[in-house]
Image 1 (cartoon, helix red, strand yellow):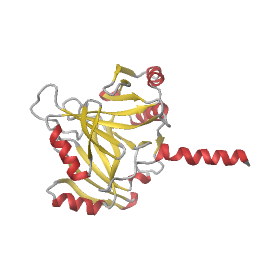
Image 2 (cartoon, helix red, strand yellow; image 1 turned 180 degrees about the horizontal axis):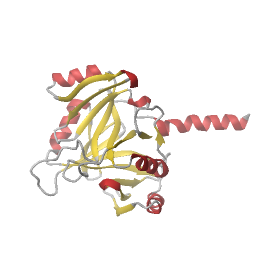
Image 3 (cartoon, helix red, strand yellow; image 1 turned 90 degrees about the vertical axis):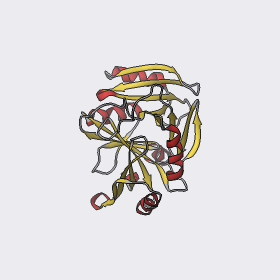
Image 4 (tube, rainbow, N blue to C red; image 1 turned 45 degrees about the vertical axis):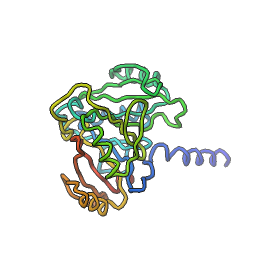
Length: 268
């Protein structure tokens, strides 16, 4: 009996680490998901499960996995390009053991990019994958999970405009991550850097490897009306998919990054 109780207690404590988004801020917003266009969704799904401790979504209707603080969705679609030329350069996770993950990643036939000490003084590295995928890992030996969500990294001449835009519209809080200016939302840091080399404009992310990012929002229909009243233009206005019990809307941020707003995705 004691053994059964211990098992149940362990399961209860472990579940939030693998299956929950962060509680929303006062505006009702929390980090929701990153949506990737990939040529082989099954491969990506297995890589995330095997290497980062991700768990498959519990409900059918979307192909993806959950990490603490974020959902990653995969669409079978050859991307029009990788992240190069878009404002959203990459996204990153904190991991408990960088070197162990890198060895395992290489053993799976995938490439490792630059290995370095990050701006916060911790061991960092990039892992590379099919379709031009690139993701940053930062070691945190005190993590209670194999990996958790950490940051979205922008490089754009509009970094200061973005900082203010996410504060005004999503209740983000100004922050710094090491040497990077940015904002924080529950579950995610936006690291906002100026461009190292000027370019005419940021390419839109829609259709590319990182197609869009998403936020889970309480009372989404009312939230969309508030944004419209502030002058935010939607690419796709609010609608609800009854069969999935999922509300959604799409817009584009000032840097060309496609953004989905959802209500109900946290139940998947």
